[in-house]
Length: 289
Image 1 (tube, rainbow, N blue to C red):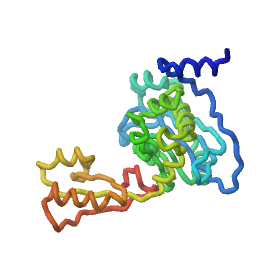
Image 2 (cartoon, rainbow, N blue to C red):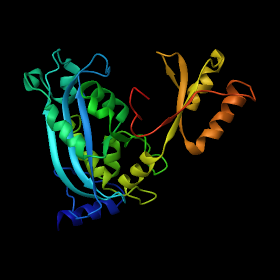
Image 3 (tube, rainbow, N blue to C red):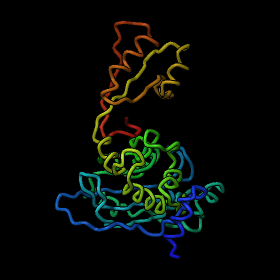
Image 4 (cartoon, one colour):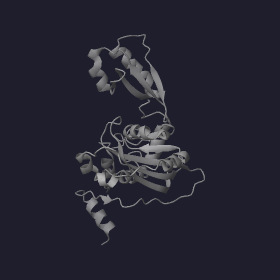
């Protein structure tokens, strides 16, 4: 009995779910004259605060894709360590396996990153709000390119996924990988991009591209009544501690309903005009947004 036959028997029983380790990206190369270049990125850092913590590893995978969301080929993989100039906390070493000896004297090759970005049309990260802020601090070129977030711009819950962590998504696609190293996370994410969603059967990358192309709108709920803060939090608003207001981001087709909610539930006003900023992939997930 072959391995595949054994897997089929076990899974058909309903008592087992078999996961295969992702060892390499099995992408069938398809030539397409209308293709574009994108780049998957992931960073490992000394902590979560992009103002104080530093990048210790940058993983990048350049890949070719078409407008239908098909990944055509892997062009290049790049994995670089960087000495942060500060101690790596023990919990970070435990999580990532990256030690101070591994990064000592190492530096991100900036020109290589610039060359990659100059030929790419899109950067994709899982939780782009984290990776983009660190990378923009490190290299300004990351401010000038469109970004997409596979965590927030794919409707995982409506597609049958109860969680949005990358490892959990991989589990639902029947594979696992060595997580918490930048290049391994990049490989896993690109593999996820090639898969079909559970409900719609659409390619993950196709759905991500469609949502990334759409503009969204940031609504700033200035001077919202203090006793309405729980209503705003429940609605998905986040507190901007620097500017001291609640804000949310909605799609264009949600804008009218959101303004109506603010009129009826928060400000109790029929005449309401709040700052609303159009957001595109150039500034989405950036601290600038």
